[in-house]
Image 1 (cartoon, rainbow, N blue to C red):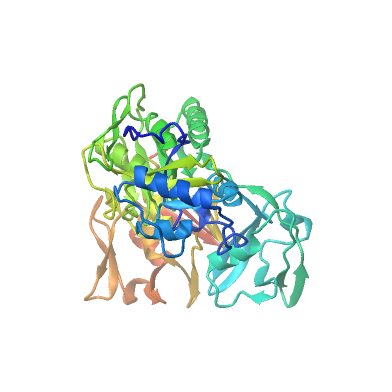
Image 2: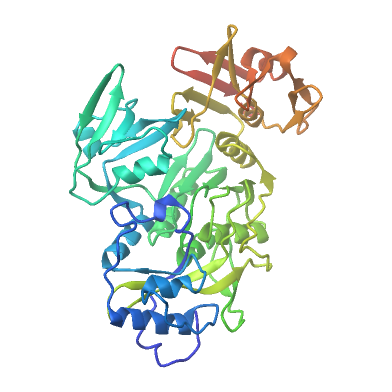
Length: 490
């Protein structure tokens, strides 16, 4: 995309235009085995990086020798967290991260009051082979207690180099035991989802990898052939990926137009255009949050600007720069910021982010609101420990708390409001919440009408909620609560 002529253009073959916030999100960081390890670099690599940065970086700076005489030292002078150098091993790891391939044991971890639990053990995984079970508490990794850690720290310790062994201490009931799985290659789906009961499609795009656009198109075609009535595309916590992939996904919804405007080091705008796209007749909703960045923001901004989708959730991260990847003749790959971008209507994204059309807090309320906005009428929500099912789909991305108190069963107020398609506001005077306004009168829930506040989360007793919203019914057992909301569908 950079057309500046120079004698190095023929030497450096640009691989892909990349738009990824990997400096901020764990999914694209290097495994613990690589993090902090000293790079083995040569004087030839140092010189090559110095020349390329001076030619390509958006700042237009002349890159002087660093005091440390290291490549990292050169990059630090640019004050740019998105420019980076990968040696051969780091480059392989980066590619695997982008494709959601990693060396691990095949287990999904959830957090519960500072403790870490196995909420899913993958089929045919090293974790399953050594007997790890859903519900096991992870209390130690390689002799390090997990108490006080962040969940990313725990997963970082478990992941590592393929073929190496990791010792995991688990608590199962009143027993503690050690298991020693050998790390293997684990592949997480980049695009996942399908048709929910009610005719609404749900596609989660976890990364804009090289194959994500093809997977997205194939799954969308299946949904279309199945009579899709609306679509929710989940971009929450998606840190970005390849710009070409974002463009190809945008072409599923935009026939022609500008995907992004760009500004290079010479302030030249070189728009990236869509020429042979298509459109859809059903409503499209994008779910976004504060960790939706870069290529996620490219897609969201374009679909917003062309009125092709409604964005639901929280304000996005605000990474509006484009990186290019260059293999070095001396070995390794340089990722360098070459452009900043604006939306099709020239909205600024960098350090600003995108505001959703429908602001909504909470993982589950965002999903429910997105599905409702896409046209879902009937809702069935099953709540279990460390997972929930929504119209038949299992989700492990958030714990959905419930309470049993004074003989009643309670669910979070925001979840209940979103389930019936209503808004929620805090009433300071009554120290409660008002729900409603979208389709009728508002209903106040306070201490006298089933509302309680537990550790900063507002809950409503289900029987009291049903009094105001009779379209809702519920059942509760020892391990599961099921909430059903009937809409206008037959």
